[in-house]
Structure formats: structure tokens, C-alpha cells
Image (cartoon, rainbow, N blue to C red):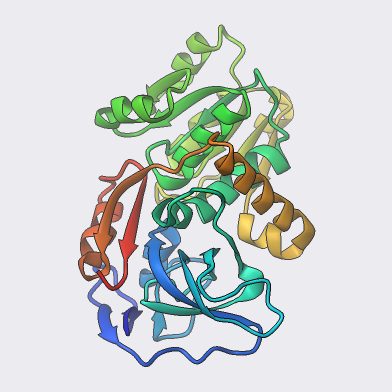
Length: 326
């Protein structure tokens, strides 16, 4: 089978190759899945560089999440051959076949396509854990979402809209504003560079944001501390901007807001019952047609470099989905 292997760490993807590997041997408790679609996430890129908090031993097959069809499972498993499943682990999704723990899989909801299912898991679980679990977002609350052209940011925009929030989508790329607006019709889309507090203040009538969702960090985080309403929450999701920001603790003290760290995968592992409830809630929202993942492009796995480079160069509005075997 073909698989995308990280043979050595590199900043230019030179350590990544598409190679032939033996069919994986399914372990007890695992499900062997024929991968039909696998989505690219920012941690996939970081892991090729050794810059993600999880550092798998080399070599490893890249890919956090996928969707496909069951080939083989244990007797008594919840899944049977032919079932459509979605999920994954920290590695292994960018391959024609994957052996995945049954506990890391769920059924593809309703009429959701396999590419959409592959694009849904990590992004929407991150958005849901941050906005619903940590912040208990309520209808009418003002939510400022950074990185709104990326997979996680767009998922947060989609989910916040579904929850009835008033959404300000923020992007660092002026040319992406129209695409974000056409996808999810947030209440406002802003070009978040420099001093954007005034924009947020004008949009909210001076009330500022009840929740700030920040996957970017750096200068965006710095300015976001000026955009949080008294008693609000600023959720640290990641650092796609490259710089890990510092904050003077007198700022949240004086403004009375909370800074929350979000690690959705770790949250689900530490609180498995909540993780299962999050997955079920996302599946129901998808089944009801209230959320729909945005896919920027679908590529055969042989064109993996195009997808990785588009992410690295911030060309995407939504997710890249690879189709192994095509």
C-alpha cells in the first residue's frame, strides 16, 4: 500500500516521501480501515518539522484523521466490514489502509460524505471543546474568532453560528474575507492586523467580545487582550503565527477576563465520557445539517506536497482532503 512517511525531520518537506509499505497488521482491539479520505491539519505539518508537542519516533506515517470503510474488526466489535467510519490517531491516516483502535473511531453520521467526515473530526472537536465545553457559549454572545480561514477557525465560525452566537470572523488575509463571508455568513469579517480593537468595538457597540478564540497567537493574542469584554474568556488554541505570546497578569486582572488553554485531544483522553459526548453532539449537528465542513481542495495522495505547501503558505480557506489510492 502507499503511505506518506516522515523519514526525517525537515523544514522544507525534504524528509517526507510517498512510499510502498506492507499492509498493516491489525492488533486486537483495532479496526482495519480502507482510507477513502484523510484531511490535513496544522499539527501534521508541524510534526514533519519536529515542532509539535507530540513527537512520534521516526519514521512514521503522517496524518491525524481520516474516514473510510471497515475491512476487518474483532468479533463482537461495534463495527462490521463495509461500515463507514471516521476518526484516527496522532499518526497513520495518510495511507491506503490504517489499523486504528476501535475507541478512536465513530460512525460517519447520516448522509455526510467521507471527505466531509474526514474534515470534521479534529477541527470541530477543537471548536466544540473550546466554545461549548470551556466557554459555554450562549445565543447572542459576541464571539471573535481568529484564523477564520483555517480549518479550526472556520469550524469555530460554523459552530458558533450554529450555537446562535454573534460571530466576528477575523483573518490576516484581506483577500480571504469574501470567501469566509460566503461560506458561513458571520455577522462581520475583519482584516485582523495591527490595532483591530477599534473594529471590534465598533461592531459590538463598544461591548467588545465575550469570547475570543485564538489559534494564531503572537501579535494577534496581544491585541486580543484589548478586545475581551469584562468577565469574558480568551481561549488559547495554538500558535500558527509563530510566536508564543506573553501577557502581563495585570491585564486579565484589571479587565476581569479569563485565559483558557485548549487541547481538545487531551481533554477527550482525560475525560472520555465528555469526549464521547462531544463526538455525539458534533455528529448530531452534522446530521441535522447545522454544520458543514469547508473543504478548500481535494487531492490524490500523490499530490500531498501541493496540500502541505498550500497550508504552509497560508493559501487555504478550509481543509485539504487527500484521497489515498486515487
